[in-house]
Amino acid sequence: MPTNKKKPGPRPAIPAATVDKMLREQHIKSANDATALAMTLMLTVLLDKYGAEDYIQDIYNDWNKLAEESLEGRVKLHELRTVLREEYKIKI
Image: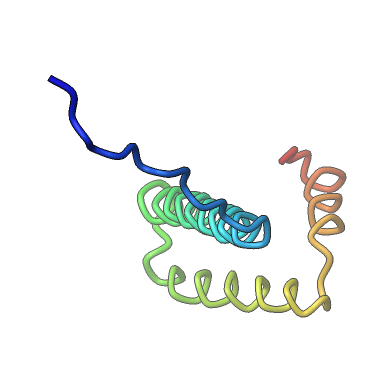
């Protein structure tokens, strides 16, 4: 028995600018999540393995200050990475 139901029309296209914005927001969220996980690992190692209880708040505060200086352009992360690699043999 035939039905008179109409098929739904095509979905409206999402503007490219909206897609780009959604992708940027997701990339930022992913980067923030990865950074939070890295900080969690590092701070936990400092506490559990190196007894940094007396210093952990200062370390955390200094980390945030350095991050702000990097965002403001006063500190270059690639230069910090170079120092770690050349002077401390730490490859990140």
